[in-house]
Image 1 (cartoon, rainbow, N blue to C red):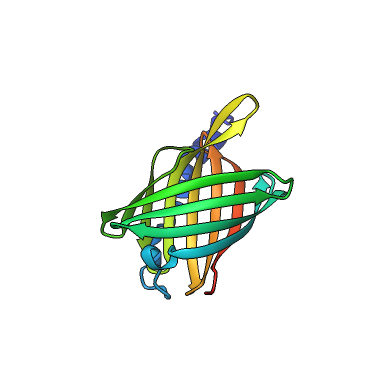
Image 2: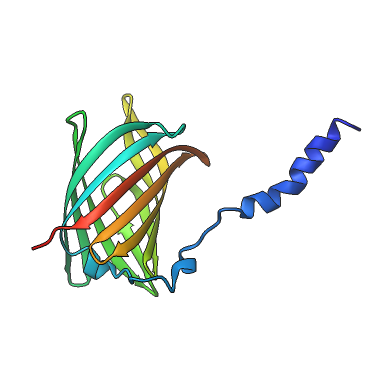
Length: 179
C-alpha cells in the first residue's frame, strides 16, 4: 500500500497544478496602451530577438525587417529575418479579422490557421509552425504572447513545445520605424 501513496498524492495534485499558469489574454483587457493590430502592424517595423533551447541557453540571435499593411480589412506582415549565422528566412503572415478581438493568422510555414486574440495591450497567438529539421520538417506548437509597452514598442515571448513538452523559447522586441 505504501508505494501507492506517492502516486495518489501526485494524481490528487495534478488538477491544481494544471490550472497554474493558465493566463488568458482577457486578464489584460484594462491594460494600456491599447493594442490595435491595424494600427501597430502598419508600416515599417524592426524586430530583434533570441532563440533559447529548452534549458534556457541562447542558441541563436536574429534581426528582422517587417513591412506591415492592411488592404480591404486584411493585414499582411512581410517578415525578413537574418540570423547570426547568416541564414536568411522569410515569413508572410495574413491576418484576417474574425470579430470580437479575434483574428485568424496564416503563413506558408504554419500548419492550418493560427488563433489570435487581442485584449487591452496584449495579443496572444496560438499556432503550429513547421521548421526545417534534418531532411524534413518538425511541427512545433507556438504559444505567442505580445505586449504593447508604448505606442511604438511591443515585447513578444513565444514558448515552443512538442507533444506538450517545452522545447524552446523566443524573446523579441518589435519596434515601429519612425518616419
